[in-house]
Amino acid sequence: MLNNIDRNELTVVVNLMKLGLHAVPKILKSEVYQNIREMVPFSNGILIFYGLCGNVLGNVEEDFCLEKDGCTVRILRDDERVVDDCIGATVGGGANYLKLLKTHSKEPAFFFTPMYASSWKELLNIDKLHSDPEKALKMAKMINDLAGYSRVAKVNTGLAYVKDIDAKIEEYAKLFGYSTFEISGNQEIFKKCYLSIKDEICDNC
Image 1 (tube, rainbow, N blue to C red):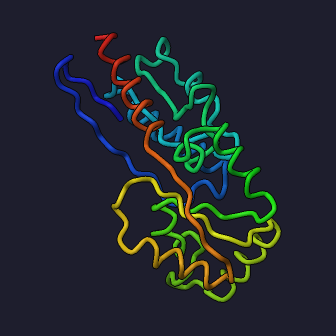
Image 2 (tube, one colour):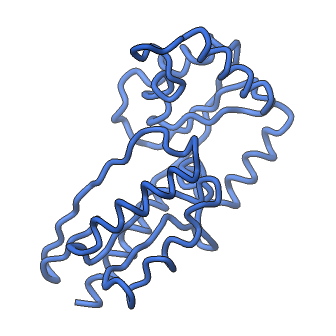
C-alpha cells in the first residue's frame, strides 16, 4: 500500500497476507479484496504483489477503479498483461515464463523462489501442530506426480533474504527424489510496477 503525504514524501506500508491462500483461488480473491477495501480509505495507491493466481485477480484494477474509490489499485504486470503468478513475475513475465515451461517440458520442474524455499513445509502442512506429516507428504507427492514433476528449479532472484536456501531446496528435492538446477530471475517487474504506480500517484497530487 502506498500512502502519499505530498509529492516529496511517500509512505509505504507493507500488508502481508496469509501464506498459502493461492491453494484455494476463491478464498485468495476474497481475502485480497477485503484487504483492499480496508486500505482504500486511507491510501492513494495500492500495488498488489500477486498475479492472476488461478485467474481470480485479473479484474482487480477494474473492480477498484480510481473514479469509484479515489485510490489507484494496480497488480503486477509485464509489458503485455497481468503476470501469471509469483514465478512469472520473477522470471521476467509471461513470455519468458512460457518459454521456460516449454524448455523444461520433457522433465517438468517445480520452481522454487526464496519464499517457497523457506516455507514449503508450512505450505504442505508438514510439522504443524495436529497435522499428519506422512499424510501431507503422500498428498504432495501424488499432486506432484500428476503434474509430472521430476526436478526442482531454484529461481535465482538476486535476493539473499532467505538463509540456507540451497539446503532447503536440497531437502525438498531429496524428500521427493528430484534433481535440482538453477535458473535466472530478477526483480525488474516488481521495480517497474512500483515506480509506475508511484509516478501515477505523484502525477495525481
